[in-house]
Amino acid sequence: MDIGYAAAVGVDTLWVLIAAFLVFFMQAGFGMVEAGFIRSKNTCNILTKNFLDFCMASLGFFMFGYAIMFGPGNGFIGWGGFFLKDARSGSGVPLFAFWLFQAAFCGAAATIVAGGMAERMKFKAYLIYSFIISALIYPVIGHWIWGGGWLARIGFADFAGSTVVHAVGGFAALIGTIMLKPRIGKYNPDGSANAIAGHNIPLASLGVFILWFGWFGFNPGSTLSVGDGSLIARVAINTNLSAAAGGVLAMFTVWKMFGKPDLSMAMNGALAGLVAVTAPCAFIQPWAAIVIGAVAGVIVVIGVVFLDKIRVDDPVGAVAVHGLNGIWGTLSIGLFGRAVLGLNHDGLFYGGGFKQLGIQALGCFSVVVFILIAMGIVFKIIDITIGLRVSREEELKGLDIGEHGMESYAGFQIFTTQ
Image 1 (cartoon, helix red, strand yellow):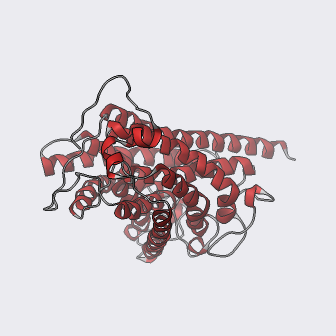
Image 2 (spheres, rainbow, N blue to C red; image 1 turned 180 degrees about the vertical axis):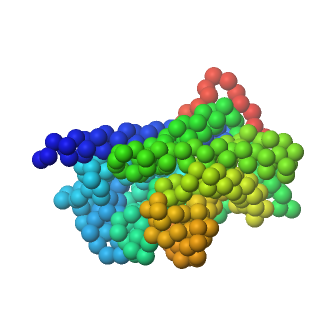
Image 3 (cartoon, rainbow, N blue to C red; image 1 turned 90 degrees about the vertical axis):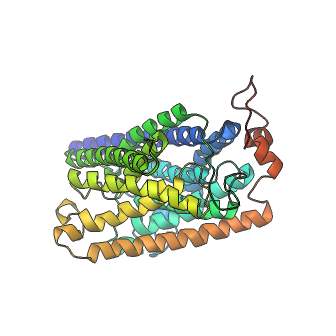
């Protein structure tokens, strides 16, 4: 083997593994955000779900998911390489490095749902869901877009997963929380919503910073190669600028609407900017990343308010952050994307017309419909067999005691009226 080639593969492998480790660390970020945004009596439960998410995702993606996503097959599904037997890498790095990076992505998609269904879902039901989405549902979408499936063949673009990861997790959370129904005390008979405050904003803030940090593995790592470094650098700056714009615009939007610069909404705005730029980050200029993030910051605020109006109880804003902005980010490729940066067609604002935008819209629609139907069926079967929701008594007492027999903050009494 040529020494130069071997060295290049070695450097690329190291880069992909470092990125995989950063994406894995995002699990801690998700856990901190979700724990901070819910009540203290459910903290252990949500952290256990986040912890087991990655365990279930790793096993499910090893046994079945990778073969469905990257194995040889047809335009809809892969079918080869189960348990990684005779499997091939989907890039120029060794199979095990590529698998670990993709498994970390799979875990991220699964754990998004924990926040949307927090504080009232049975733990054993969640474990079953987590394995199924990781082993079967997420990989199908991944095959369509990243595994050479039908969307890839028509030119659909999603560089690092606004649709593959975030829209999948966000809309799975939407159908799940609709089927679970709202938490006790969330809505009044007249339809108005009661604020159920999170118990630890500093913890949530730490989680957002961890996620922002981990996103520098999530997006730049999706280059899967170091090359001359220019693509990694462009993706990194776009990622950062979109997050910053999202945080600022979300803060100003909620300030204008409700009279206070709400920190929790500003943090979700930064996450919304990160989600939105994940698909277009390789295909856009930095100024476009700012615009995309700014729009995402507005979308997340309006989305949270709208979901409350239709009585969809999403404790952490998972649907607005990941679902709505996953779609916005994917569509933005058709507006701001450039062929000179690797896209099949220029976006609308660069004279490319509606071709790329139309392809992006078709892909978004197809993924959302598939996820709503597939996960609706999964959640319905779980509900019929073992049940989705804990009892009223257990919900009021808290899932930490009811599900796990332990307290997150032992040694003193915490009173709650909810």
